[in-house]
Length: 288
Image (cartoon, rainbow, N blue to C red):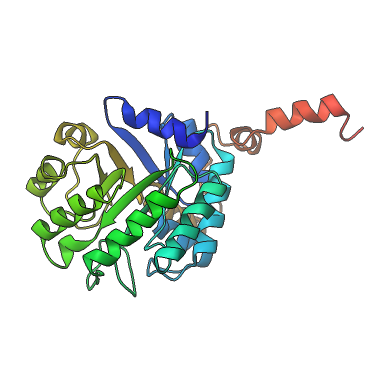
């Protein structure tokens, strides 16, 4: 079964799909090993890890696809990826869809921000006219090669033109053929509840720690009626904090912090497949 079909199968079942955010192969494999059914490639994490840049739309489509390809290649669960605005006009969106498809990604989301685009939880965003947004969604849906490839329409209108307009844009995107709807950055628990009620397509919720959206439990997210929860900053924030702590310990104490049990060099390699590579080496005589 292709990963696009696996994601469609997950979406067809009852219950919430939870996809923590990965920005590289380490975080992607950790998500898979923890038992989550899907991986979300975070655009912010990709921008920071690939280029050391903030999430200001500074990466190209090629850079984003290359990172998504590495992540999709290293896990056996569907990868849902950020595709920003589609990187240009409708014809650019078509190429964007084909590139993500070609590299094993199961779904992408395309947003209605203008330029310069930025993280959905920052101020001073701009959105494009509705017709422009909808034509991109239609192009993505109509020109995908794989009918199981999931097209997600994201609107950032809540912060620009208000909640009601965000709902109107969401429903217009659903009418244009989007498989899932992503209303970015709702600002209250009441808005969280209202989105799945007022949008007549399956909905995504972005649980971005430190952002504009109130933090609620996954149990509440499912009860509200969402189909997919993404947590783009969960591991990114945790890694930044852990690195700060380790470096501070090294500077202060003068030695590395105590190693957590189970994190020997050998055990770390095992997390990334060393036992299988050792087996293959013995089978084919590598190193003899």
